[in-house]
Structures are given as C-alpha cells and as structure tokens.
Length: 329
Image (cartoon, rainbow, N blue to C red; front, top):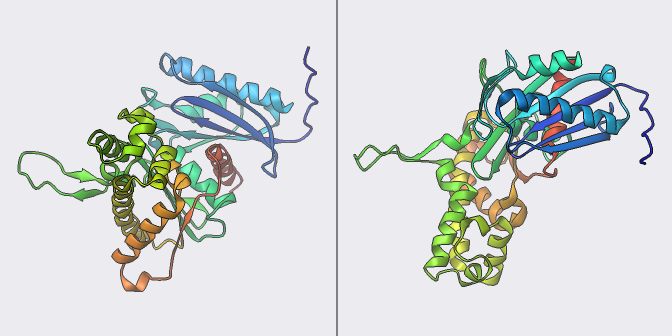
C-alpha cells in the first residue's frame, strides 16, 4: 500500500493543458514549484460532457498528488488547443477534439469554486517563455512555433495580446503567394509552406526520387516516420536536398518574422518546436538572415531572434502564470 502524501499547508495554483492527445494538470505553490501533477489521454473522449468530466478528474488527481484540496486553490489556468473568447471564457473551437463553444471557465470554476482563466495553448507557451524562459524582461515578446501548423503569440507590457472576442496572432495564415493561376486557388500561406508537415512531405518526395539516400535508409518514404531528429541526422549525413528543403522553409518563415517586426516591433522573438531543437544552427541562422534581409533599416538591431528555453510542458506553467496575472491584477 502506498504511503499517503502529507498535506500541503498553503494555497496553490493549478495549470491545465487541454492538449489534442493528452490532458495535463500541475499544481504549483506561489514560487511555481511543482507540488503535484496528473495526466490522462484525451483521445477517445465522447463529446464535451465526457471531456469536461475528465478535466475535473485530472485536476482532482493532481491536487491529491500535491496533498492539497479544492479549497486551497487560488485559481486555475487552462491552455486550450484552439481559438478562445477571453471575455466570455469560452473555447470557441478545438478541431482536434471536435469541441465547439465550450464554457470551460464557467464549468471548471463552479466545480472547484474558484476563478478560472483560459487562453490559447500557444499563447500559454509564449507567456511561459516571457515569464521564465528566453523572453524574460522583454517589453514586447513574440513566440513562433513551427510544427504541424505554425502557432504564434505575443506578450506586450506583461499581458497577452488578445482580441476583443477572440485570441489572435494566427501567423500561420499570412498569405505568401497570392492566386496567380486564375483557376480558383487561394494561393499559399506561411503554414502551408513552412510547417513541419510541409517539410516532411517534401522530404518524403526527395527520398522517393533518390535525392535523399540517408533519409530513405532511415525512414523510407512514409511521412509519419520523418521526425525533426531524422531530418537533422539526414542533413548531418550529407543529404543536401533535405538541407535545401529546410533552408527554404526557414527562409519563408523569416518573411513572417519580418512582418511581425514591422507590425509590433518586438524586442525578443522566440522560436520553438522540434525543428528548432533538432537543428538550431541551420534553422535559426536561416531565419535570422532572411528576417534581416526583409526588415526596414530602422529596425536593425532592435530585436533578437532566440531559441525557446523551456520544455514541452511549459504551456501548463504559462497558463498558470497568466491566470494568476489576471486574478491578482
């Protein structure tokens, strides 16, 4: 029989990451030291009722792991995988979960009798980098995370940049190449050209054509086998075409970064995700060079482009810190 955990005597904060494949809750003290955590899979949830019930279960498990009870909770932050309404506390849509118009703040708040604050999960990750990571002490920080898509967020004067009725910074949907064929296509977006999904697709094609023998040997031509680490290994082994594919994507991402600089003039721009972690020199260097070539001379030297410092679970810390910021004022 496991030994019962000693009761934690003070007040606590709870962060919750409502991911596409997992739900993660962590309990923190005032210094953001982790007191307890719990995780469950989200895949297979049948609708929002079951999903909300599972959220409650995970939070209760995390509190039990921390030796805390609901009456000790000062507030709960929830990072959501989709656009949210920051005014009403509603998750507008979570495509990976099949959820629409879910009143998360109201439901979780009533269950635990405390204030709940939701934010977009990418915003949560950016706020974590501002609070504890690469963007510390920035007046205006922007985070960009190329993955399956391209997520982005911004913190200005300590507050997340949010619209009146929706979360924002959908950088991945910036048009790059307008319609030119006259056949009804809408052209390409930053996400369509720079995401890891696009890179993996182009890499699989190169492997199939015999242009990337090292990648072909390691992964075959199945996109699902082509990870950021495998791409980095292929470049290191001499697959020039894979390096060209990554260079092109990073160059185009620099176009998006330059756009953000002209709009917001951030002093720190944080890039995160598997591609950046796997090949920081190639990816970051290319983005920096591309950005510098496309920004007006007046902006030279006003910004830094940095690699993210925090781990994958940073979002749960970020949504906690953001909730505390809102609750405490």
